[in-house]
Amino acid sequence: MFKAMQRQIIVMFCGLFLFAVGAAWAADPAAAPNRGALFKVQQGGHTLYLFGTIHVGARDFYPLEPRVAGLLKKAPVLALEIDPLADPQKMARAVQQYGIAPGGASGLSPDWRQRLERLLKDYRIEPQTVASMKPWLLATLLTVSEFSAQGYDAALAVDAHLAGEAHAAGKQVVELESADSQMALFDKLSAAEQLQFLQETIAGIEDKEQADQAREIADAWRHADVKALEALAQKAEEDDTFSGRFVQKVLLEGRNPTLADGMVKLMARENNSVAAIGILHLVGKYSVPEVLRKRGLSVERIY
Image 1 (cartoon, rainbow, N blue to C red):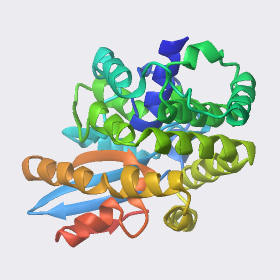
Image 2: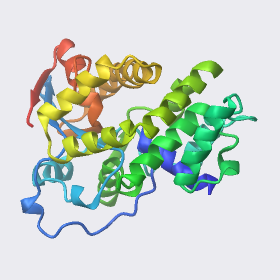
Image 3: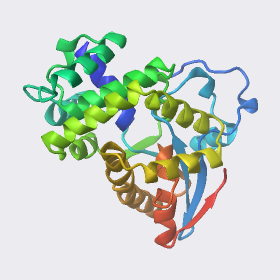
Image 4: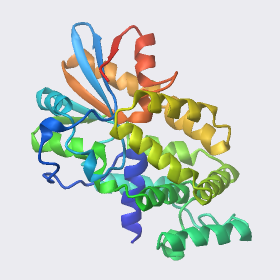
């Protein structure tokens, strides 16, 4: 049970899931609409295509539109935040190192503990299986569980689908980050900050904010809705809660320069590669496309 939860947590925030290659999707790929967002990046005679993904999925997400499938087929390299088919033991060690500690979220007050236990019951999670999770990891599990409750499946994550296609075709898959670097960002939170992060997550689920956000993100990705994606970016930038500031400033804006660095290095040695990262990294004033533009690269939004 606990190992299964680890896999769910990883896929939501890091895109790490052992995806079954060769799943059957919709019958007519030619009819597939645009999904997410797609950019063309150029520098020094080399081109890179940047595609926005979502770390959960639904069956109607597939097949991806023919243009993305064609770009991936021609690409010498697929770059992801993290390769979902990398060593699972390495990923599990990162969870153990950064997300597990004696006592877990024992600092919660009795009132918050009761509210947590109600959610665990709703998600059919036994309290003892999460007793050693640090508050940030437990908050992440709750978020994953709420996405699942809304009908989105970690096994259908877009990152995992792309990784499966690339590996099946014998293509090189490179990582722009690591599980350690991503999870270490959460572990830098103090004990009090982690509890606040968990409490705000619990409150957001109770108030249906998480459910609304899950639908908004998935629908915007499903329809490649530029206006909706930009509205989500603005909403995130204006969120003044502790957890909202952390997600925006640390998990998005803080990581975007590193993701851009990896793409620039990849472009220097390869042409026509594809980079696929979470859609929220591609929208807003501090997005990866904006970082690349400020560094002098040509960035064209295809859709």
